[in-house]
Length: 196
Image 1 (tube, rainbow, N blue to C red):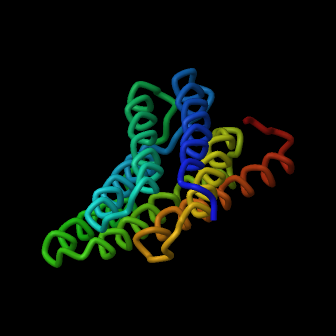
Image 2: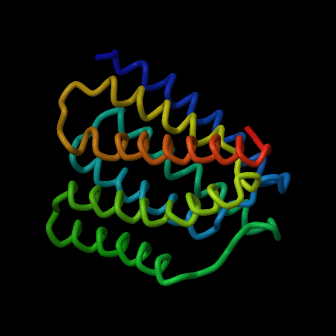
C-alpha cells in the first residue's frame, strides 16, 4: 500500500490528461459526445457526495476531479459546433439511473447505493463514447483516458481499508478508461490515425 500522499501525484496526472482533452476540445480537434460528457460529470459528482457521506478520505478527491473535468469539457463542447449531441433512449436511461441513485440515496441514506447507481449511470454514459472511439478514433484523444486509468490505479494502491465506498468508483474508472484507451490505440493502429 502506498502512502496517501501518492494521491497528489495521481491527481496531477489526472489534471494533465483532462487539461489536454479540454484544450483539444476548445481547438476543435476532439469531438466529444455531449451526452457522455454531461453524464460523466453528473455521475462522479453524485458518487463524490456519497463518498464524503461514507467517510472516504482523500481518495474521494479523484472522484471529484473525475466529475469536475468532464463538466468543463461538456461546457466547452457547447461552444464547439463539431461536438456530437444526440439524445437517445440510452441517454435518457442513464440520466434516469443517476436521478434514481440520488433519490434512493436520499431516501435510504445508504451512500453505497448512490455509488452503485453512479457507476451504472457513468457506464451507460460511456457506451456512446466507446462506440464512437471504435468507429471514429480520430475524433478522440486517448491521453485523458490513460491518465484517468493511471490516477485511479494510484488511488487504489493507497487504499488502506478495502470497503466498497473506498474502491468502487476508482476501480470502475481504472477499468472503463483503460478499456477506452485500449480501443482507441487499437483502432488508431488499424486506421493509421493516432492522436494523443
